[in-house]
Image (cartoon, rainbow, N blue to C red; front, side, top):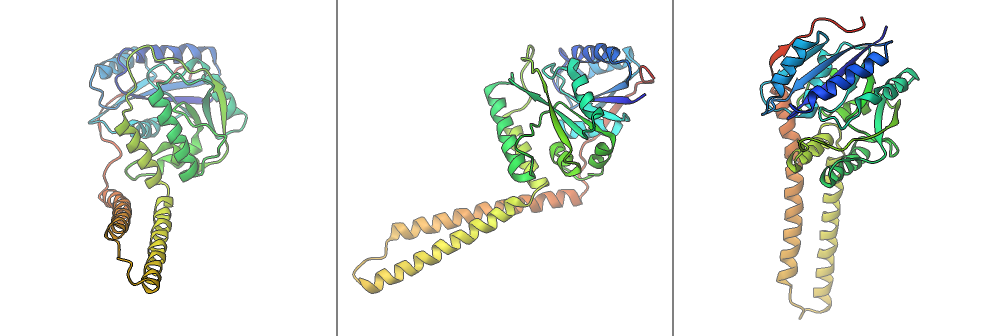
Amino acid sequence: MQKVSFVIPCYRSERTLEGVVDEIRNTMQQLGKYAYNIILVNDCSPDNTLEVIRKLCRQYDNIMGIDFAKNFGQHSALMAGLRKADGDIVVCLDDDGQTPANEVGKLLEGIENGSDVVYAQYEIKKHSMFRNFGSWMNDVMTRVMLGKPKDLHVTSYFAVKRFVVESMLAYQNSYPYVIGLVLRATKNIINVPVKHRSREIGASGYTMKKLLSLWFNGFTSFSILPLRVATVVGSCCAGVGFLYLIYTVIKKLVNPAVPVGFSSLMSVILFIGGMLMLMLGLIGEYVGRIYISINNSPQYVIRDEINGKTTENE
């Protein structure tokens, strides 16, 4: 009997988490051919999410909880859950009920049919306009920076085989980015259509700051394309500056009475100076991340573990 491990990052989900767990349990009872367990990772939520996790762990033997010492973000929570997951297949989903746990059979069927990774694809996303914009930007970034196929839709609801999980866990550095880890492990990835639900309780935990941090983490941790772009832009600026210098010299030789323009000179200096500062900042970001990784900055710190005992249907 194959075993499925469900990994759920939890943040501000005290009112939704029990419903998600109940839906997983009811669905897996119908899919009786699988054993399963559930790993709930509390990302230092400021509400009573941890108490809900403790209650669920006391109530069900096949649920375990992980409590972070501080907020490390969704991707670090996923990595912590993956390290505790022991299933042949691992399914990751959200804690807010918007990802339909009752359709997990579609993801598992895709795995059984030979795919290494199966992502849920939503025909209509019920996120806010801000969150949909963030998802679109993330899609563009992963296509340009990480080589994601254009027709592949990446979401927070997906299933992966065991060997892909092991490949992802080999990444020990700071700033984990799950999508990048999946894409570098395999290209045998498909989408399956599922319905996306409207959020009934609470609001998304992703702010603009967190989204920007996520995008920056993605393209600086798994791609050197920004550095190559910086090299090209710097070369173009140098070329334009050289051509402008030739133009100025020729203009002065042809018509000595033409004054040298102060405003044009300042605009060129400001443009080149701004580009230099931008490139130096980008290089500094890479160097800073290398420094933090060398100092063994942890992906996460676990304050406590609430352990389940057995695996249902085993």
